[in-house]
Image (cartoon, rainbow, N blue to C red; front, side, top):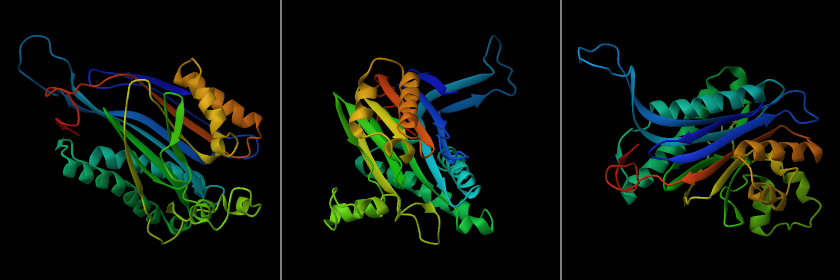
Length: 298
C-alpha cells in the first residue's frame, strides 16, 4: 500500500506520497525510498515547571527529505545496497549536518557540499558492509526541500523532476554511458546501438572502488510546484509526456503515485518501480522569525 503523509506545518507546506512496486518481471524489489520531515525536538524528561507542559516540545520544521535508491549487484546485494543507502542518507542528514546555518551565498554552497558528502558517506558504509560491499551498488537521488528552495544530490539513473505551469523539467542528469554518448554527439537518439548503453552506469554509489561523483542541483520552489523522484523502472516504461499528463491531473500525490506505477506495469513492468511525489501547497515564512533562507535555519 502507498505511504502517504501530509506535511503541513507553520514553516513549510508540502503534501507528499511515495510507493514502490516489484513490477511484473522481477522476483524481488531492489528499490527503496524514504519520505520524512526534519525538525528540532525537545523531549521533556523532568521539570519543576508548574502547570501543563507537553512531554515533547517541537521547534520549527527544518525541511523535508525525499530519497529514492535503486540497488544493483545481484539478487540480495541490490536490495541490501539500496536499503543501506536510504538508511545511511537519512542518518547522515539527521546526525552529521549542522542544525543552524545562516544561509549566505557562501554558506549555501557549503550546505550543498555537506549534502553531497552524504553520498560519499553512504559509499563508505557499503564498502564496510562485508566482502559483497565492494560489488553491490545503488543509485541515490535525494531531495531536500527547504522553502523556498529545493536541493538535490544525485548519483545514477534515478531521476528528480519538477513540474511548474505545465512544464516538466528533469533536474537531474542520467549518469549512464548512453547519456554521455548523446551529450558528446557520439550517438543520437535514433541510433539502435544506444539502447545497449542506457542501463550502463558510469556513476553510482558503491559498485566498485571508484569514488562516487555526486551531482548537486538547486532550484527555486513555488506554490503549485510538484516534485517527482523515481527509479528507472518508471521512466523506462513511461515517457515524459505521460508523466507530465498524470502530474497535471487533479488528485492527491498518493493517487498520482499509484497511477504512475499502474501505468508502468501496464506498459510491461520490466523493472521495480518507485515514485515519490511532493506537491507544494503553501508558502513557508520569509521574515526573520521563520525558516527562510535569509534566516537562521538547518
